[in-house]
Length: 276
Length: 298
Image (cartoon, rainbow over all chains, first blue to last red; front, top):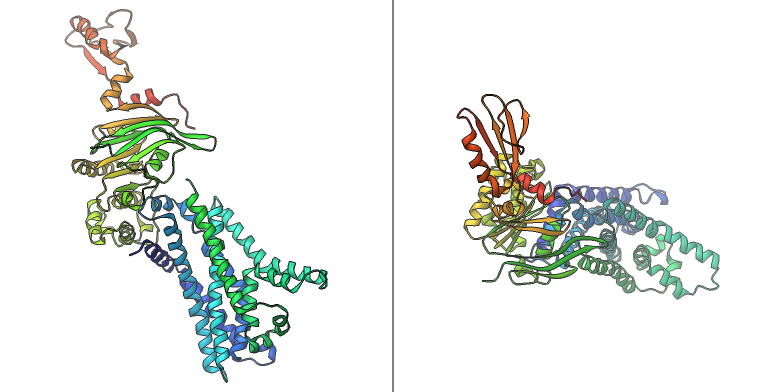
């Protein structure tokens, strides 16, 4: 068996042993189900709404929750093993540091993927079965939402790994992970909004606004899910935005991918060069 | 045959701190060699350098003729390592942990049960490591180091935290390995337990190699004085100025190891058959204090 897969399998086994996988899956499934039942409350009814409504509410939830889960999973990956003394032994085994890191990442990504697909998929199936009609477009929008949620999680997992490679002790890594979450999930959007309001469309061009939204994986995720499908963007009140921001779904997907590959490559480089 | 481990002028600095200072030695195949020194003397750093986990600031390290940093997986498959304070994931069982390491090393996991038996953990193989005692974890660490019958074993402070019975069992296993021709390098700060267990001792102090040889060679090198005491049956004997009276009827003197027989020859005719004679040879702890004494831990 390849060294990367051996590392990934070990990571998955340990995470399922300490109930990380179970807890995360139950949390995501519980929130997804409750949102899909209560999601149509703003429209005046309680009960299962349409798949599109569920996409809007779940995507908004994911932007807060998934980065947090992924960062919690990632920040400990390197610094934690170093502090517990397990890293030193692994480094003497016949596998390269790249293999070690990619294997761990693959294992953690598989855990995130499992929890997201199962948790959200369950909600999707319940809504799809009980809702009045599920159009092919709605199903596609829901599948896109699940897929991009996995990518969003992986992007923040990679950022967590980067923190874990940069910082010397676990406490500092945890602090840095929380700071990353605050910046990307809350502060960045406020700053962009503030800039747009202050600017009143004088200096900032459409291209500049698009670029600003690509610099944050959560914005790429939000735009991808709330503007790519007309039926969804009507519900999300994003129809105007999608006309304004000239970004194709493929560009947004590529952005999410870049936010996974970039931090991960940087982490591998830092970790391979490190001399302990 | 070339030496399995060769160091030439190796220095390792971490920023301002010099952890290893110009160390050179070559080990012979099949011998058990002990690295001795205070905590922080550079033992662990030296082991990391030989394992290729860290690269030297100056000098060259050769393990089985290869530079361990750039060697890749082939060399690492032939090495075994037991780190100081070995740690495993507490939620996995001993068998699972060993299976993982055997897979990483490309060895069949079917041989693992025999390894667990060898270190006396067969009965605990399917218990969680979190429930293991310190001694059991250390033995699991040793089993891990023995995966795939390595040619060279690196053991970093292997006996700390083991009770005397386990310590003896540990040195028994080490003896079997020596008989099979495995080169063993172990670090320790207890010189006394190496008697009869190490062919050669390297003494490190503040990163520098300050003594190198067998225990008896080190003894000769240190020239520690011998203490001779006489306990007279009747009164205090008058043996000369060198003899000091400790208590009523008991005198003692120290002399160089070389003059011991001369002192005894002049002493014996003057003793009464009822008198008692004691000769204190310097112990290993005295030797340790001689080489490393006075140096405060950094």
